[in-house]
Structure formats: structure tokens, C-alpha cells
Image (cartoon, rainbow, N blue to C red; front, side, top):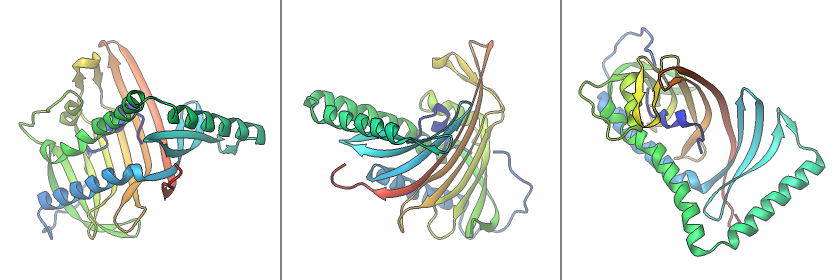
Length: 264
């Protein structure tokens, strides 16, 4: 679902606000552990849904319908900068969809397996960061409050001393801290915010992720038990080869979740 490289840090956490500490109804570790279990269910269920996605960056905004097509997602363009495509453009996008559907139906067994494997690899790549959440951070309960009409636990997170990232991608967690708001009933993430607080060198990419990098994630219920992303905003600031600055910004929203039909 998330196509931005920095989205893989979505399971990390941002600078805490000054809030009074309170006696927790549950230990912080139990709250976070339950939230990770809830997010695991969401991650497993995500491919069962189609949705609308709007991507905004420095070039403008595009809205897509995203559907599962024979085992992997397909994006069909719907709008550009909030304006619906013309009838001719819609016909062209429909033809592209039909052509892709025919192409996938005609793939050999090995080609189909490679396509689906590449999609699953991307999903697992993003998922590693969530799995590292409880290992990478120390959590403190700042309090209980209301957010988006829900009762939530508000937690602060700071890097855990002695944490050893299992892979290169997880290294970014060592330079982050943040906040998360967890629904007290479902233990779902209502909101997560994070920022890089010290430079993190990514050896395999010959790059350094710098302070000024941040993200914000919000989730929404799509069934009684499954929550999926509704908004994600990310800004990355990095240096390539120690000299060339690189900045990106993206703001994504998701809506109209519905379970996939048998024909797709």
C-alpha cells in the first residue's frame, strides 16, 4: 500500500509533548504488545480490500482506484488535482485496466509467481519495522485522553539503549523518537507521529537520513476489527554520498475501503 521508501519507518515513533505522567491502567509494554497484535491482524487483512488513494507531492495530486488484480494491486487513475478525468481519458484508463487484466491472466505460472512474490516481498519489507517496534523503543504512558472522539492511551517512545537492528532498514529506528495514540478498547493505532532526531547512516544506500525527516500516520476502522490507513504525511531529508542533499514530501489519503469482489 505504501510506496514511499520512508513509509517503511511507519512503525517508529516524534518529540514528546509535555504531559503529566499518570498511573497506567495497563503497563506500557502490554499496551504496545496488544497494539502490535492488532496491527498484525490489519496487515494480514489488507490485501482483502480495494480502496481509493490520493497522492500529493511537489508535482500535484492524483487519485487512484486501487484493486487487487490476480494476486497483486493495480492502480487506475481517477482524478488529477481533484478534477475527474474526461470521458475519453476514463475510456483510456479502462482499456489499460482491461489490457493489464488480460496480460495477467495470460501469464505463465512462473511469471505470475514472480509478480506476486515481488508484491509480497514489498509487504514483508514494510512489515519488518512493525515487528521491531517493541524491541527498538522504550515507552512511557503520558496519559489517557480523547482523540477523534475515541478514548486513547497517549504514549511517548524513545530509542531503547542497546537495541541492535537486525537489518539495514531497521537502523533508522535508532535515530527516532515520537508519540502514538492507541485506542483503549481495540488497541488500534489512532495516530502515530515520529521524527528523526539524529543522523542515521544507511550504509547500503550510501546515504544519511537527517533530522527534519518526519511522518504522521492516522488509521480508521473499516470493519469492526480491522483498521487501515486513512492519512499519511511524510517528509524526508537526507544526504547522498555525504554531500548531495535530497528532500521529498508526500501526503497520502485513503478512503472508500471495500472488500474485494470475486471478479477482481
